[in-house]
Length: 488
Image (tube, rainbow, N blue to C red; front, side, top):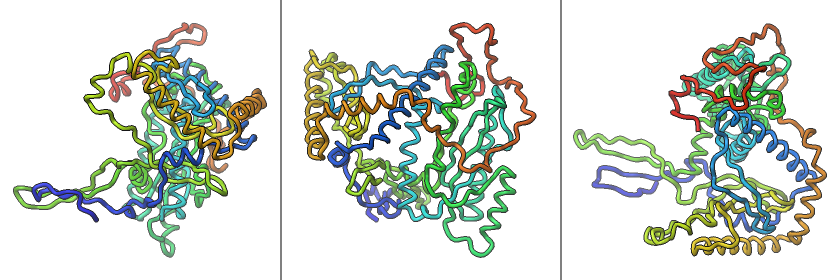
């Protein structure tokens, strides 16, 4: 271990070696990722399916967002006009920013991807990965529309958290992930809350200990628990919390109710080793020693310090196919305060570069880096706006060199190919494969009898179907107001 510093002999901070965090030493830089992945071709079948799927998600996302906003719930963020610019093709796309509402399809997709990539990498490279098992926990009953979905899910989360704590304490079994789902059934007009849980023994449970652990878990969680065996694919566990096509059956008032029922709930929650591993991508874990000046007693505790180069997990195009790798995030250089103070205000408003994304298939079947810019103009009038436009042009020249070196076609050819494949996908969006939610059939409850549709008194009563105003402001329930002063 390496001592970072000492301060009057009263505090020592010691960094752990990389092996403690189970982080492989090998990683590549963000710029190496640009060089490798720019010009990476996606198969026609995958591109058409992705285009159709994204069109479906965008349409459903816009419908839900508009329905909520018609009732006074803000879903879009005011971003001042952000545009996505393809660094090779030069294509420009408007970017809508949304609040983190868990059942907006684009938000669910955005938040699932890094967790899924991380779990795939964790399973392959962490010493615990090959022992991960999947289980499904259900609530034992369906929740009718306008029922207490929030309370039911919160109770399920508490039960799982307590079980995880006791499994760790008494059996040395680590519960590393909990992902909640609330699928809707139109026939019974009800929701089925359940959770996918990942867990693994830190050491082999010998003899009949494993059977005893499963028996104890069954008693601890009740009859609504099923061990589904060893995790084969992380996609089996990390699913969307809902099926987008199912939400099409809910009207605007039901969506408002669902918004309040899921407000700030932790739908996906990494735990224990997996959570610590993910934290280690962003932070260095260090041991800090402090000396009590009165007693001289030394105490040690773990603190987090931001990495100079934070890491993320992403796919890299290598010979033989894509591989998950650790990627060092690029950090923009901070301007000196004296330089910032001298910049005119008009310069701050033109061509504000927000970020540069990894190469993506946004405009064609060939991947290219995309720069997000606020208040873009190709004819800036300010010095700052002109400097940032030239920075964008330099990025475009760099991306084009990578594109040509990797054998990608002329950008106009790539765009024409993309348009043709998207046209082939139009009209097929309704037939896109629905997102799988359930892992195994036995976990889905078959009983659909005796469903009550009484409304939850803690949720605002919606307007009647025959008397709905165009705009219907919704009051935040008291139980939610206590956690946030306003819905923004």
